[in-house]
Amino acid sequence: MDKKTIYISQPVLGHEEWEALKEPLYSGWVTQGPKVKMFEEAFAKYHGVNHALAVTSCTTGLHLALAGMGIGPGDEVIVPSFTWVATANAVLYCGAKPVLTDIDIRTYNMDPDSITDKITDRTKAIVPVHLFGLCADIDAIKAAAPGIMILEDAACAAGAMYHQQYAGSLGEAAAFSFHPRKSITTGEGGMVTTNDPQMAERMEMLRNHGASVSEEQRHHGPKPYILPDFNLMGFNYRMTDIQGAVGLVQMKKLDHFIRERDQWANFYQQELSTIDWLHMPVVPEGYRHGWQSFVTLVDEARAPMSRNALMEKLQEKGIHTRPGTHAIHLLSYYRDLLGLQADALPASKQANDQTMAIPLHNKMTADDYQYIVDVLKSFGG
Image 1 (cartoon, helix red, strand yellow):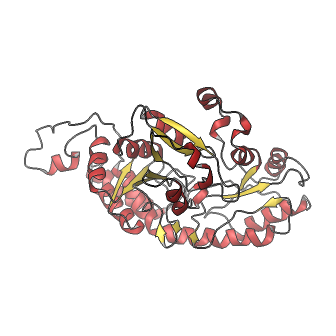
Image 2: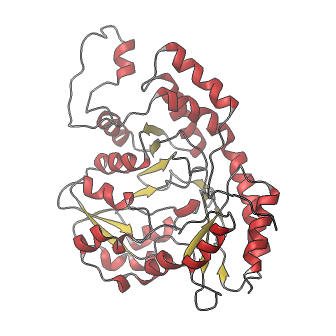
Image 3: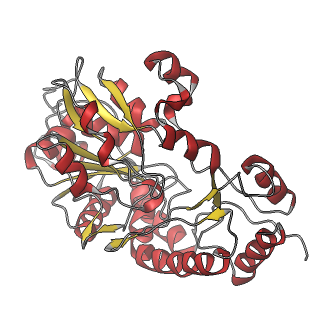
């Protein structure tokens, strides 16, 4: 077979996004303004929430949401170990302590059964991660930790659903990512959602240095030359109108992107099911997967080679792969900070060592998918 080059992910940006950039560029309003507001309104309407606030990234969105919840020094926040490090970093930004818990190896999401013994009188919030676009089992998490605030790390989960309810509407707040590896992108950028009006008001101030009114409100008000009061120590987490304009266009494509990814995820599931050492991702009944990534698990006891050797062989064939993500408790900073042994969270360690994401994105062709299937089958099993 002829060698191809297939990237792990590629954003879909084109003429419509290019045209959308003209208005903020020509108007001169390139920081947070009317396009951001329109993007926020479209995102909130789609996900069935009352409030959406655009920010510079999902990481700053997580920090903003935790600050909006009042998380601070002395507090503890439960976080799964198998997630991108930003989930735990945002807790530290607040001066709080991340308490790492294990995952369900079938879904890669937080294991509700591992939460109970992590709860103390200092536990103020839980951050379930909707990893790779599959919502965490929120009902089971709430049952395991009644009364504790939930912040969804929905970085990968734009458009994902849990029992007919969209990600972003399942807890007290949520944070999404628009990084180029996500299904929709604004380059960098993120969104925070909530149904709590008081929390939304507090986060609105915090993302704009703690100002009592936004820049747009001030400039359109009767006395734009008067600076607002600053009631809180805030941050500069504002999205630009350039990004907001792109985000508006991308939102219109989200359903199409997910449908197309779902179609090819099903193709992978069917075609690769005969490889006994390669475990397919699980989608429980009643879930709509957002398919940010298609993450497999390599059973190294049965596979012809290790996960890393397999990734190297695929790279030689032009197929770009990645580990699903990392286990935070194995990273040197957190290993030193929390002092957890590698086998303290066994499912997270297994996922760290054995998961492999294969390409799944909206720039791939049918030939690309078939090529990947054929190469994987050529290794046997």
